[in-house]
Image 1 (cartoon, helix red, strand yellow):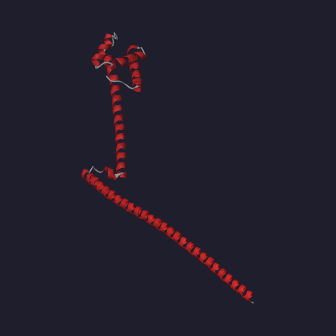
Image 2 (spheres, helix red, strand yellow; image 1 turned 120 degrees about the vertical axis):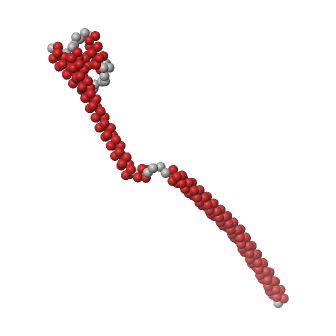
Image 3 (cartoon, one colour; image 1 turned 180 degrees about the horizontal axis):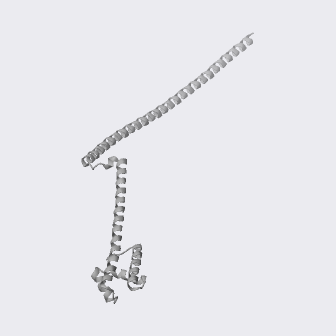
Length: 213
């Protein structure tokens, strides 16, 4: 016949204890709890009455009916209370969800729109197209960069070649100048040698002239 929570069961134990005490003069909570448990384990009033009778309670039918009414009334009251609480909790949860959804719609209006598969497909195609364009531009940029590198390398080689040619020309000029200096030194030696011969001839002439006189 359903279960009771602790508070409702305590309230019911007090009611049944008072009822049994009024009928028998015995105020026994353990007996009241036993009667409540027996009722919970009975599928209907007939089963409850049969079990009490079989246990030798010798309660009159009106008293058993009154016990059944009290227990059933408390259970229905608790069930109704639980149902109201459940509905209230559910309503609060639903309201919270609605509020959250409403806030999300305000924050992200685009996400609240229905799915547009055609627009999504067009967007995907546009991305692919843009990706191809970007890839082509990157490739062109890399090719231009390679051409610049090749040009700079060629310039470096040309400058290096010009530098080497200049060094060779400088060396040739240096050797040419050195040869010229050597030639001038040789000419100077020849001139000195020639002048020495002239001086010798003059001395010889002077000597012969003194000899004659």
